[in-house]
Image (spheres, rainbow, N blue to C red):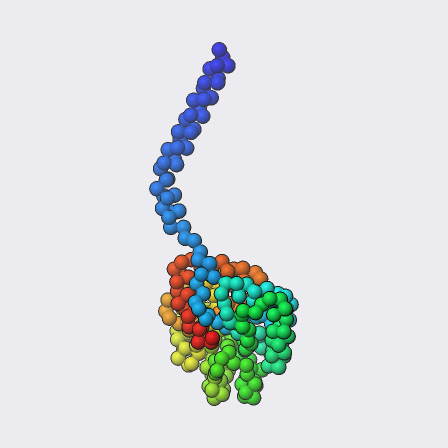
Length: 279
Ligand SMILES: [Fe+2]
């Protein structure tokens, strides 16, 4: 008798608990439904690549900068690019005094070696050319004066600054760039921390003749929230002329391939069309 009473009182307790849980679930069901409705899915990168998109910023020549180390790594990334529909890549090894002072000839030689190997690995549907990402330092100043430059295309060149400070002789360098007839495209303007709080600085750069190339990885938050927010802001204010992957390795390729939430994906897809002038 005593055992029966104990058993029934336990059943009552369990029932009470279950009814409590059900009430809580019913109360929050509308909120859960709304959250699920608004939970966005990412649009894969492969789905937003326009015809004749050219990637104009990457580090795919093995062993000459902080990009890929071997031809196989390079081939793998190019194979993935090929699979997702990119038909042309202009890869841009760093040229940076004291760190990677690559000569134009070194860069050309590395491209030739890579191009010889790619067909043997079955990579035949993607065209690869080379230019460089020039740090605007004394070495670049000298190269510009000697007209020893690898342009992206026609007179467009890809340049960068340190992420900590702008070159003190920026005006002088820009003058030489213009004298030589080049149009500078500033790589990843959204990543320069010293400009990030002041959009007027970007206005000055644009007015002085720089075009802007946004890193797609900035929109994925790869360089931090502040850079991501600024990247979005720059797109919304029409500061961006071109985009680039700036892929150095498999990890960054993986992030890129995940794509973007639909609103960002739409904007990126429109911007990517600008890169078709390099085709
Ligand atoms: Fe780069």
